[in-house]
Amino acid sequence: MKKQKMGVKRKRKSRGSTQTRRRTPPELMEDMVKEILVRLPVKSLLRFKPACRAWQAIIDDPVFIRAHLRRSIRLQVGAEPQLHPQPSQHVPSNRYRFHQWQLQRGTTTTTSPRNNVATFLHAKDLSDDQQFYTTEFTHCDGLVFSTTTTSLHVFNPATRDGITLPTSSRSILIGGGRFNYHCSGLGLDPRTGMYKVVQAFFRSQSMEPAETKMGMEVFTIGGGGGGAGWREITSDPPYPAKRFQIGVSVCGYMFWRFSERHTKLERGILHLSLEEEEFGITGLPDELDTDSSFLLDELLGRDLCVSASNTSCTMLNIWTLPVADESLCTLWQWRYCIEYPWSLCSVMALPPFSDEIILLRGNNICRYDLATSKLKIFGRLDRMRYQLGEGARKSELFSAMPFIESLVRITY
Image 1: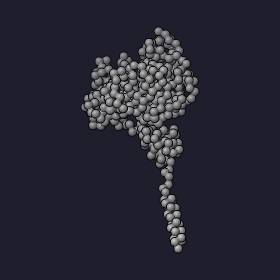
Image 2: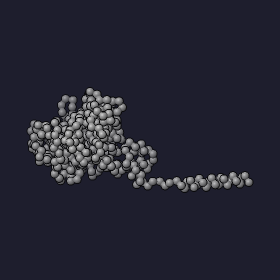
Image 3: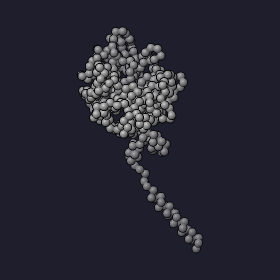
């Protein structure tokens, strides 16, 4: 009798385990998994990638990467600006450091401890033979493009990827002394979905503006080919671009200012279609004084922005060209004229992308309150506390730009 009872107990236990297995919830549908993952920050996605092959395939999918990027851009509209301060050595160095800084709500000056800390993102050490002086930065879809006195670099601080571009066989723009001047830029080809680095070179130089000829070449990131990846663009710019500048990329176009010796020949700026690889000229705002200096900026990758101060450096005028909505078949829109007691500055954010006008001049991050017409400095790049105990050094220079997280991969 005991043996029979034991057999019954075993049988009942077996039935219970079967019922437990049947209650296991079904797996989430792939669309639901994507909808959840696309809402996560890059740091979490990179941590979850090794969890299973299915998640890794989703996160590495170019369609998912673009969807995640679009969501990151949408979240920036109307939010407090996130900037990307980068300390760079004034003395030769082989290291980049990237930090993230965001204005905390309820703070108006740099005296607030909450408003004075930059979060560490990534540090990139290059080989000892690649020491350089950093010159300029620009960004596109979360990628950071840097020109130095020795080479060109592309980074993704969110994924901690980075490459040094191969040296081109064509002549670079020599500036004199220890510096090499670059006229270059980084942008997205909307047709292929690939990112392109463009740099200029001289075909011929002369004291006569009409006899100076400039060409440009392109390197497609992820296009393969190593050193042979630099490819000459068939057409040439109608006039040479200013040689020490970094291009502004907006919706598949790259923009540069013309060389000073050619600004009187053509009242406009040079543009390059990254899809067609054809050059053209975009006119400047009619209200812009021909003798005024100006700066080019981009706003969330959608609008081209021109800012210019008056001759007495008391007012700052701001225009935008809505490239994302109308391509280049549209007119400049005059947006603001504000009291600004200094010379030129970079425009980092305008309504509706921000509640106020955010400006950068040197190490000062300023905001202009449209309601009160007051200009305040609310961030100093050289006085921030950089995470990991690394404070600003006297030998360092700083650069800052709007920051958007992305999963965009960087490969040769």
